[in-house]
Image (cartoon, rainbow, N blue to C red; front, side):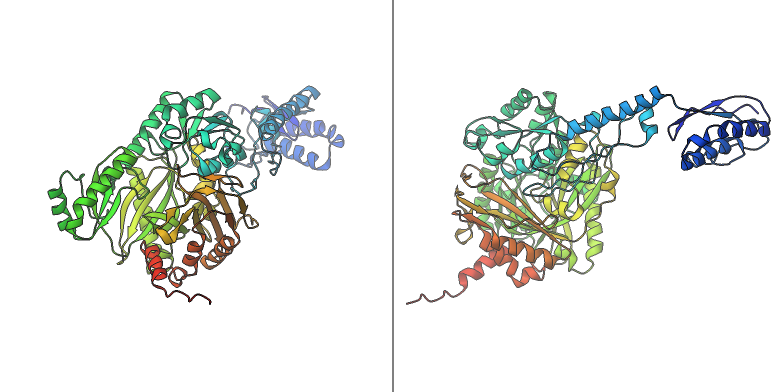
Length: 629
């Protein structure tokens, strides 16, 4: 049998060289023992034992490799073996190994030193595996969790690949959406660029990023929706990728294609996916193709009033007129009888055309006492897709969410909740697979009073309420978006993530609930948040004393997310935080949010999408307290 070839090994700082000879095994062993005896006195006891294992393991019939502990094939006492000569490592070799380690250490330190000095310093762990350094590989680097002033974004996913890292990202958004993305970029050591309008050059989101570029006047069409200005700002500042945040350009396939044509990376789904799911009629057809039940309604857009009347009669009143494009409750209206159908269609068409540039509308059957449940999806470009839990968003006003929580009370307290949860996850993943979807996405479902669920629409972006899922899973969805856009597969930590506890989010708006939730813009003169408790409280905002809540933009002021082991704990914490929050002299919906939390129906988890309207009606019908004389 031919002699075995053993590659050079590195073990305990000593080079082990294999030479091929043809000698009896006993003579080999005797020679090795003499050779080893001359060297062992100079070595520590533990190292002597390791060297004894090396020398005896390969020549004395050991059936396991001494370094990998794997079984060796064709090893026996009577076969030809390799003589192992043990030599001290030359000083120059050791010096070169240590030099490589110091170079990698220095590069890691330089990378993490870009974090703000007032934050917790990132901790790097240098690789101590000498074999890894010998092969010229970098040390394994892991960034520690960093606590930010407003929020703690957990991350147990390690470090971005060096060859996939975006050195600079432009955030094509404003307000708390831009601040949210900037925080994750800062933690990852990625430089961030903000875009801002002329009236927001001193805003918090412009100050949070490393750079800011003014791209136009206050009107959103002239600044934040100006695609060419956004792309030019990215090229001018040297950004390699663009993150759209949520809202504005996040669901615009034309913008995605323009970004890619400019040689930049869009952090989000593909343009084809955004185009597909941006059309609710196409999304419904895709869901049907995937075997998922959809809400009864139109298969094509309405063309004339007679057709609409016939379809509404077939569905049965009340019906819902919906815009085929866009979202956020814009271009949506409930119709209870045929007389109001024509005017509702015209109103929805006008709103859809003004907001989305698409006047198409269609009909859906309006579900009585429905509950709104959505499933968070994450998927990489290699085809790995996963459901990260569900959220209930049934507390709404003007078809827009104001309180979200996870897990969904409709499943938590309902009969057969776990089976329904698994069915929802399966339906969402079927749609994602059918569309070859990647990045973050949200499948939205309606749960009727009988407990049946129907697919409603798909949001191909990061949701405003994504923080609820992050609190329950410990994952950073913005980080996952960046990793997926950089070509990384989903990490094992993501695939093993399981939701725990309960999280509730409340959106604070500058509005007056008693007057139909009418927006009330103004200046913030004093601001007070409650003490932060990492892991149980998260506040996302873009306001500070002196900030202006402008009439040009959405009146969202902040999002407060609380976490607890149980729903009761999370709700109590949220109520206490709202009570201790002061945003003066703005008129906000804080008192209304506290009324929701205190209501018996909410505490019991028994509410639907009409709950906010009923609560306001109860308040209007309540007897007024007599005035004091």
